[in-house]
Length: 330
Image (cartoon, rainbow, N blue to C red):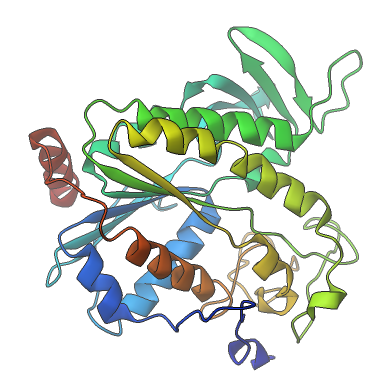
């Protein structure tokens, strides 16, 4: 019932971050296509953007792959701007493990095989926003080059136990390489959105954890970041190399760095106040309220688009135009 989270706004040190301006945003992206690639937090980010842009023009949903919305496409016809959300919780190839026909919630991950479902749509994109991390924190078994490397959060004896950061870094390495290696892509700006912390207290999501705080943390109240910053740094470890390679291929790479800002906002999660028809009594301390702190991500996004506005995005290739036309028709 608390609404104070709507009144708080993150203020960076030594600079000013303007409030999101939908007209400025649409002036930059007119005629372009933007893809949010990742898990449900990528969709959270996209939904925030839709709400903010609706002050200027109403987005129209033109395609939805299924009830879960694994691929959703929205179009703003007056500005000819298209937004896609492309479901890929690991970015790399993954298959869910099953025991006696029952899904276990864990996955086989292949760090040398990309998830083709999103890569196939890259030629249609001018902007790609990568943001997958949260599905790595489960019993996953990891492979590379046909060899079993080890597992995350498994209890198997005589198995190498891997930290999620190692696997996250490997997944982003391959994802960024796949963008650089996309021969059918024209110029594209790729933005990596860093790890967004979950803020459960007194338990995890399935053991009674809650998020009942009604005020942000002050900077001095934040612990040193712990594993949240480890996971963020694992993502960032690959961006410089991708940036160097991208300069030769007409690609631009940058970072939407939200981790430390979001560490300050434990008050901005839905908690018990979410659509929990499947998980009665459980709190959502992972996603962000709309409106709420997640809108800051789009203030960051607009700032980065302005910085890259001189980047020469070329006109759509024939292949890219055909992909976009097909998706919009569906």
